[in-house]
Amino acid sequence: HDALPIYTQTNYAVFDGVLIASLAQQRHYGLYEIAKRAFDFTAAVILMLLGLPVWILLAVLIRLDSKGPVFFHQTRVGLGGRLFRLYKFRTMNQDAPKFALHPTDTGDPRITRVGIWLRKSSFDELPQLINVLKGEMSLVGPRPEMPFIVEGYEARHRERLKVIPGLTGLWQLSADRRYLIHENIQYDLYYIRNRSFFFDLAILLHTVVFAMQGI
Image (cartoon, rainbow, N blue to C red; front, side, top):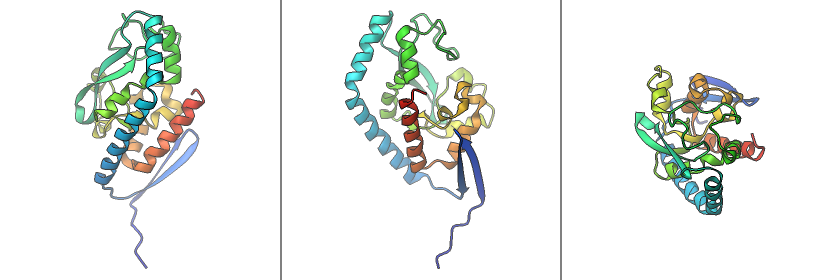
């Protein structure tokens, strides 16, 4: 009989009421990274082409609702600490501070009327498909944070910089998504240690379900 692989550690985590177990063994991420990049690029192209009418409609609504550009961009920290420009549909007033902590509720006076709906639906994140095409982001991974937050990172927080940041991840699917990302580092660390192509697919499918439920 063929020998079974020897596992050195069993990790457990509960996400949104679901117990996830991972038998840890030595991992080789080369093939996974290639497949992940190919999937990201292909999916981003398809989603952008299919969603073009939605992008046009959202652009019109944003311009009619408030003064300012359609897109909002902000410097974020990516793989290895490299800086890149992250894109979103603008959801706040033009004079809102560009580098500040995100609003914690829809009653924040910085948020526009259309912006409230964009945030609830997560449609404001759609332009980040551009970042995915450029290879600066992935569909799944830790959310990229602003430089002033990363400057205050401890060693365990910097583990997040070892992988490409993503549009969605375990933190976004958890009950702790109401709090700051770096205060709930356990979700990103679990993902980084157990990431795989099928794990990414599971997160994407769960994200779609969340979006359809308006969560």
